[in-house]
Length: 306
Image 1 (cartoon, rainbow, N blue to C red):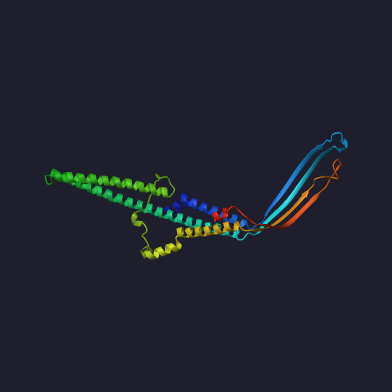
Image 2 (spheres, rainbow, N blue to C red):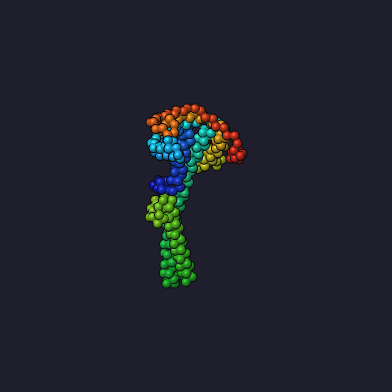
């Protein structure tokens, strides 16, 4: 359990899958925002200077020094677009579900990799223990053979065979130690640790045994995998997202209906006619209406996009 906790908390693949969920969740929010109006506020301050000089007609000369401010507030609300926003939202939701399934798949892959490394390390520890016992037995046999030869009971060939068996057992033990170090390094990496981190595992006799569910028929397991496996669910969600994307692109080529509103205020000074003094003034402009946009021709580009 501790190894699984470490692997799930520190494995970069699981963190990457979780970040993908957050990104797709944000994309769902972006798609939902298309149903809300947009509002823009604008302020403009200007200082104007201009002069006009008329040759031989000084009475027509004029100079202008003016300060003006303009404030406006605009609202745009898309009312209907033949399903474009709905399709975009459906695609974003489907991709969000797919990212959740991908995250579950990454978790399962990390768990499987960790379990394989864990039990491989336990197996390597058991193999090393057996190799050490075999080396001890071979050493004892070699020493017994030497004593028997000294007493004239055994021949030199028996001693040589015992020495060869001891050397072989030593080589087996060294290989078992190497395999254990490799397995320990892989297990540490699975837990997000440096490969030279010391790791202590319980004996292989204390490991959990497979449950009886493993004994189920392969066909039943395949049926369940088709229904519940995250990779299958992710593929189905990506398929639905692709279908929704097609509908979104089609809808973008259809008319749209929008509500427009604007309120503005202007303090530009006015004059009766050229050459007359200016008078302070304030003008207001309020607008509200509907806008219908009809795409007429796009060079068949949207057809190819679909």
